[in-house]
Length: 288
Image (cartoon, rainbow, N blue to C red; front, top):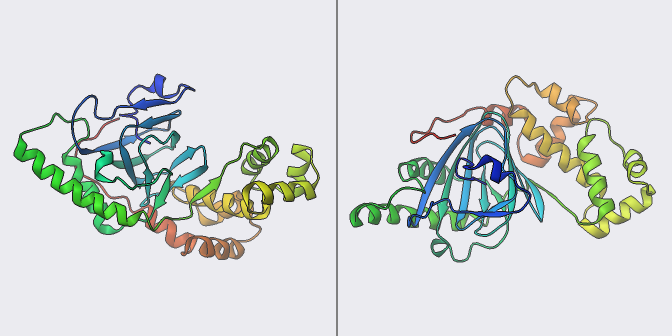
């Protein structure tokens, strides 16, 4: 997700995926990166290291060939080495990323995941800011301390990979399904199956069959998940009310929205909003 300050903005927006050398030719076994900035589209890219990115504030959206992921505040995204992805850094984003040489997590899988990180992992990621990923390798003693720290963090992250949060939407190469998903996401406030069917020129019956056959879920389930993920992103923005968010994602009344949100996320919209707006202030190097 991190592209070295998303170092070369022009190149990062290229349509051709690139592999980014976050170590800038260095030999660090692991390291960190702090990003604060305005809205940014990274373009498709990959890394030569594993990456876990923790959202301190704001919302990040990540897309891979397999799905569309939402990274709300106080959650972490796992992106294994070599995974092609693109990211949208929404306004007021603040994230901490820790990168690991693949040898530190040799069995990390090959897909993106959103993790509910423990307080210990969060604090260790903040502490890791003293060792930037593009640092010059120091003395043998200094690097031994850093390597020991990151090996411990890598073990904790490996355990956390078994506890991912369902904060993603599927993607599809099927042209009708892809068009239907795009239309659904663009019209969450008032969309219906009839509207989508008309927009993609198929019957409602065909629409339901294609979603089931292609994605393994119904269009109605896709709609609900899209609404919940959009609601989580909106609730993290400044000056938003729960009522406004409820209306924006297509609910007729606040009580039905609250019930659906709680079933999806395990907490009410109000408690989620309070939690994600408690932004922590890490110490360390700040870069844009």
